[in-house]
Length: 89
Image (cartoon, rainbow, N blue to C red; front, side):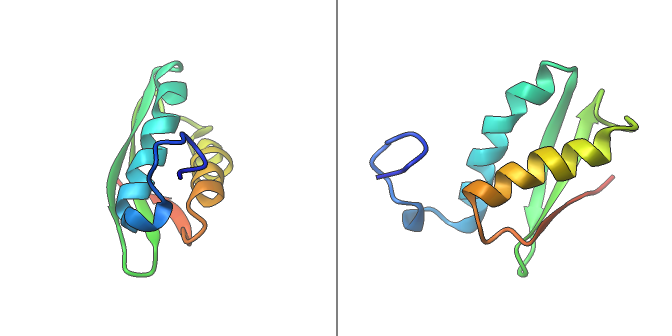
């Protein structure tokens, strides 16, 4: 059973990218509360996650901190295989 939502699925049943997408959806409301958003661009073979910051997050001086201390931290907690999260334009 999934520890996060008790949905009956094990994390092993979902692909790496599907699990990353689920976590992105979980953090999205917090970003939207501040006028921003995040789009999952994709995942690489080495488990690097590529995202595109949007709205108020795009070009924000605090965007790097939001990404590393927020998005990346949460992703790595919930999907330990994540190597790093990088922003793309």
